[in-house]
Length: 531
Image 1 (cartoon, one colour):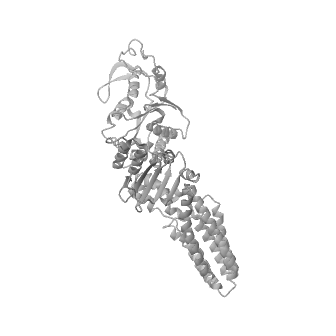
Image 2 (tube, helix red, strand yellow; image 1 turned 135 degrees about the vertical axis):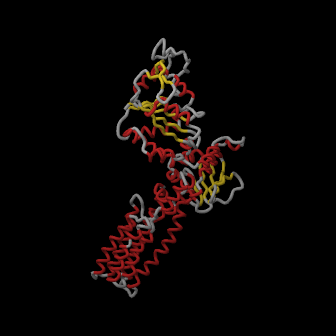
Image 3 (tube, rainbow, N blue to C red; image 1 turned 90 degrees about the vertical axis):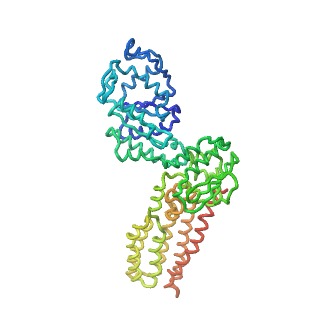
């Protein structure tokens, strides 16, 4: 299929609308290769129509003006699909594109024909009956109502039933770094629209509904839009850092609130300091009279912009000492939840999702360690029963591979215990296997402790953070070594009068490691981020 894209944005390649169009083309090409040509109307030499009608009289089908239209008009007749891509300007299309549309007059015949739906029309000089059109447009408004009626009516008149449209209101948000996640989600729906169009020439009901959803609530969008302009002659608004922080404040989603947080931003290259005060119902931007911060980020404004728009990986930049974080690292790792989530519903949905719980993992092992040394048979039965309760916990918590692996290992050890194997050896082997499991996981992509500590750090999003993974890798190794040590001294303990209390004694030892873990999980990331 020959596809001709008419990019009518004066911004050319920087067009927000063109981002949507390229996503549509990507979907269009998913299951078949199309010949695609994009014409940048803003750069083309296209003069205004003079209304001489020479293309109908003196030179039928050919305009007397010598410019790029001589090259573009044949492409219109050859294309199977024409994609009109442009932002809304004054409730219509950009002026240069309107000039282009006026100059398509040579494609029509001068003779008047009656329209089936009323009024008159000019028939086309060429057969366009199989030609299709997709209009892709974005605007700065948050609604199509009383904004797009004229444009849509015009295209329906020109293309009739062969016309489909993708209208993105709040299009200015496509360039807001803090909303990259929501923008990516929207563009994925656009790609799906491209896939569906390539197969059926239309969009499904579900896709159309997704494409019609606002990128952000209307009232919040208005606030963000205002934050990007020079308002009321305020001198501060001439400062790019101030505008950026105002917009960041406007993006805040109260649904992410857990407790009051003060985020302090110090832009080293601009020598400017700001505070974002996150409260239950609002986020306040402060430029003076600062409060005691929970987290302070020291970075160049240029770097922070690149991190915000995803050009640079934030955790990698931090590990490379390109910027500093002072205070509570958890707030830094929750930034995307504070400022980059599309809706309150998304966050509420995330909160309702089941979370992992290390207590489930430890429960199976602790029962085995405490009861088996006292009574091998009863301990074996109780351990197997504990392992069988995983299906119950799975309805309330998210199980990891380690709970499942532990259930298998403990069940096997329990059966062996019930058959009268020496308890001293069996218990020590169990501690050894437990420790080996921790150490082996430390060398996997996601270390064992990360599956549980991520609950405090924006869920599985934390897995993308290099420092988070490194911290948990160290802690996982430490826990593994602890249980190898326990396995060693337990053998000697099992051969003393305290043999039956081995499991109970060893259950208290990890408490001290837990205290160390809680301290290290905060100290190490903060130290690495600070220096």
